[in-house]
Length: 256
Image (tube, rainbow, N blue to C red):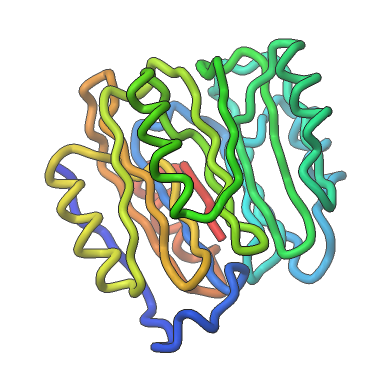
């Protein structure tokens, strides 16, 4: 059973007028397997490529990235099984680069978008294979997701850009079951997540777009159900992260 640790700030009732980049979501878990965690964000500057390189040189890998109201927000860790990593930060979806990397044994392990840029992180040695990608309005994605669920794939990446949701689905042994939920307010989000926590689901992705929160949750194949906390809609994440670092949690996912 999960302990319920939710910290959220009620946001403007006119949620549909809020852009995807005005929200931050941070999910922190115990028992992530991550060690020596590092995070940084860029503010009004561009992606901090030198900081990524510095962390790579120290043996960390990007495990989550988002574009938020504090800029590009990156979490990097040791303790992953990946053997190599690459990213592409570009103004339009780099289809040929993605397929080239897939052919070389890489898989998409993190995905994010701002209003004008994509950030796609691909890693070698992950548990993901047979990845399928679709960008479409939600009305078109429901059937597509169901089709690949039926073939044993799970959602492993989501991003919102230009009124379209991009979803990545992968063959993976990490999950035994998966579900998604929508919420138009933080209170609705809290209620729905609590219900799934009670069923031993964990948050694997949480993003805001088109006036709604889109949350992906899954049961782990290992049968484990570690304690989990999340926080949304805040401008200074350092205190929240430190509070849960002190409780032996690590950042699992950053959404925007």
